[in-house]
Amino acid sequence: MDRIVPIPTLHLFPALNDLLIDLLRSLSPEDWYKQTVAPKWLVKDVAAHLLDTNMRDIAAANNYSATPPQNINSYQDLVDYLNELNAIWIKAMDRVSPQQLIDLLESTGPQYHQYLQSLSPFEKARYAVSWAGEEESENWFHIAREYTEKWHHQQQIRDAVGKPGIMHRKLFYPCIDTFMRALPHTYRNVKAREGALVKVSVGTEAGGDWFLQHLSGVWVMTDNTERYTPDASVSLTPDTSWKVFTKAMTAADAIAKSELSGDDELTRPLFGMLSVMA
Image 1 (cartoon, rainbow, N blue to C red):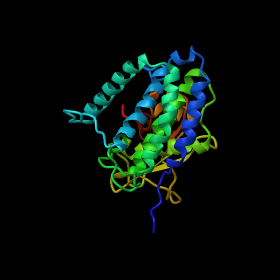
Image 2: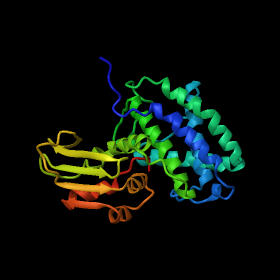
Image 3: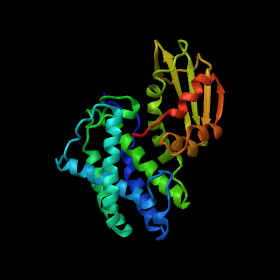
Image 4: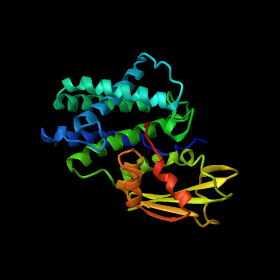
């Protein structure tokens, strides 16, 4: 019997890319230089970063591998390395016009998707989803992680220029569902009684409910909650959820915008969760 991909996202990339191209074409010259929620990036920088993602994976599809990183001995080393790569790319893209960026994103989007389609979903991915605490990941999770990157960076642009968001269930739910895979890793050092249950809700029809339970000394995601009343519950809006989990909103601001109930020791850790490399 064929295994079912836990969070299917592969089919969503073309629609998301089409929305991106339409969005970028609608921008005024001034819009390209507006500040996004990413402190160091303007709208043009975010668009350039999205192109970088396409180019790197297309290179991989062509069996090209860049110079491997050196002296990566910790998670922070990896984050620092990626931040440096991003900064170098953004600086180089200063020479490229907005129209060139649009043309390149439009032409590379299908090639990027074709590469992702070539990956066997349950084989080992080239890169683990480190923010979920994994040292090895399957390709379906890697693809879902890439989807969250495409989704939240486009949303950063929309947020900066005041364009309608992509918060409807078809596109938002797979992103937030993937983000929530970081819950067990986030709570790994949180002590609790056996069976303790944390409920995380993201409101509107675009969101949903997620449950984290402490079993045999380990926090695990679970759907089997009928016998348990949550010891702690957190309810966030979609806007707060994507921003706090991508470091675009402080924990304090997110807490102020959310509803918390139950054990404070079990609600607060959620606001330290990051579902990006940061």
